[in-house]
Amino acid sequence: MATNTRLVSATPEQVWAVLADGWLYPLWVVGASRMREVDAHWPEVGAHLSHSVGAWPLLVDDSTEVTECVPGVRLGLRARAWPSGEAGVTIHMTAVGAETEVRIEEDAVSGPGRLVPPPLRHLPLAWRNVETLRRLAYVAERR
Image (cartoon, rainbow, N blue to C red; front, top):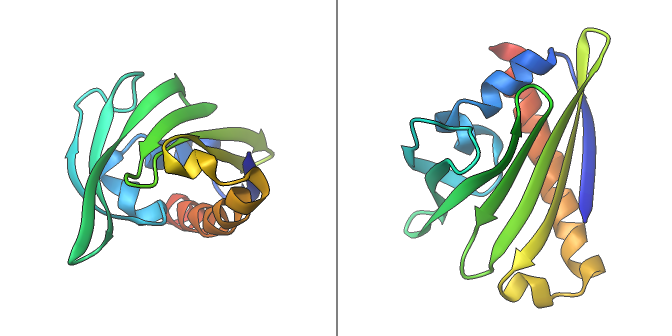
């Protein structure tokens, strides 16, 4: 599993507010390019985001589902990115004084991406999530 951590100059509640607004997903998730629909009960377990991945004209319509939700503490997601497969993603938030340590864990859980040996799939996920956490911090710190 690829794991990245970043200290964010915002409270867990401020970070959660970004995660809980499904329409902001493409602002902080690397690869997500646009939102098509957000379930009204996002981010409750079972809620979906309908988004597109890629760049025009090579957009793929996909979705992300909430698998775990502990507001201000943890958000579990199952992100579809076909044709490469699906990923399990967990975002943890821990208060550190007036800041928040945000940890993201991600790994392929199904599809062709699962066939790639772990060291080879974890390296690009880790690189990608450095930027994902940078973007999440940027949005949370400026809201």
